[in-house]
Amino acid sequence: MIQTAISAEQELVFPLFAEKNLQLFVKRDDLIHPFISGNKWRKLKYNLQAAREQGSKALLTFGGAFSNHLVATACAGAAVGFGTIGIVRGEPVANHVLSLCRLYGMELHFVSRTDYREKEQLQEKYSRQFPEAYVIPEGGANELGEKGCEDIVHELQGIYSDLFVCCGTGTTAKGIIQAGFAGKIHLVPVLKSNEHDHLASEKVMLHKEYHRGGYAVFDEELVRFICDFSSHTGILLDPVYTGKLFAAVFDLAKKDAFVPGSRILVIHTGGLTGVLSDKFLLLNK
Ligand SMILES: *Cc1c(COP(=O)(O)O)cnc(C)c1O
Image 1 (cartoon, rainbow, N blue to C red):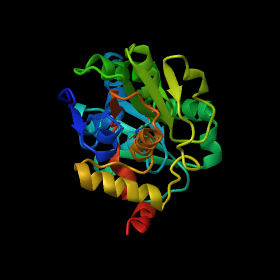
Image 2 (cartoon, rainbow, N blue to C red; image 1 turned 180 degrees about the horizontal axis):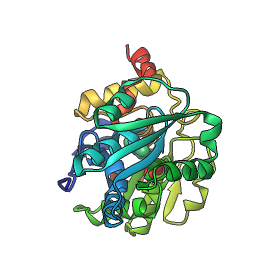
Image 3 (tube, rainbow, N blue to C red; image 1 turned 180 degrees about the vertical axis):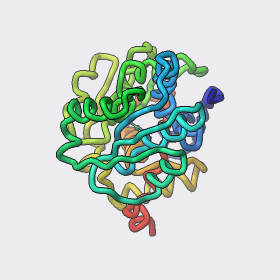
Image 4 (tube, rainbow, N blue to C red; image 1 turned 135 degrees about the vertical axis):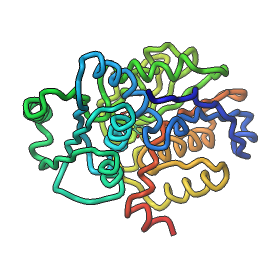
C-alpha cells in the first residue's frame, strides 16, 4: 500500500496580504508524494482500490507527453504491483516526464493527435488490446477521482473563508464542491474554455481571466512570479497549474477582491514537472 500522511496547512507571510489584512494559507498536497503528486494521488486512490477489487493486473491510462497523471499512474502502479500502460498523445518523443514513466515500468504507446481526439474509440481499442487492464480516463477524471478529491475538504483542520483551486478537467474542483466546503470556493481554470461554467454558483466563483492564453501557455511574467514566490517560500510552483493559480490569488488581493480579515486557503495540487519543460528553462534566466 502507499502510505501518505494528511497534508499540512501552512500559513504564508507576504507583505501584500498583511497590508490588506488578509491571511494566506496553502494546503501542501504537493508534499503527498514526490511523483504521485497532489491531486493525482487523490484521483488515483479509489481507482487503485477498484482495480484491485476487480482483480485487474494492469492500469491503462491516457495523457499528453508532459502529463503529471501519466507519471503518477506509472509510479503508483509500480508501488502497488500493477503493470502500467500509458497511451500518449502525439508523435513519439523523449522528455524527462516520459523518461520517469519508463523508469517506473510504464509501457508507452504513442497515438496521433487525430486518433487521440476520438476518446471513445481510443479507449475501446486499447481495452480490447489489454483486456486485463483497469482503464482510468485522462487526468483521472472519473467519479472515483472526484471522490478522492472530496477528502481534501474532509481533512481540513483550520477554518477558512475562501478556498482556491485550479481547474484542468475540473475533477478536483467537483470533489471539493461535492464535499461541502463551508466558505466561498474560487475556481481558476488554466485553459481557455467554457467547460467549467456550469460549476459556478452562489458559493462557487469562476475566475476565467488567468489562463494567459490557454493550456500550458505562459510568459516571462509568470516565470518571474514563480521565481519570486518560490524564493520567498521554499515552495515550488509550476507554470501550467499552480503558478497561474497563485498569480490569480495575488492579483485579486491587489484588486481588493477580498473582505478584510479573510482567511484564504490555496490548494497546492502538486505536479511540478512543468518546471522541467524546455520553455520554462528558456524563460527562467
Ligand atoms: C492535473 C493537475 C491539475 C488539474 O486538476 P483537474 O482535477 O483536472 O482539474 C491541477 N494541478 C496540477 C498540479 C495538476 O497536475
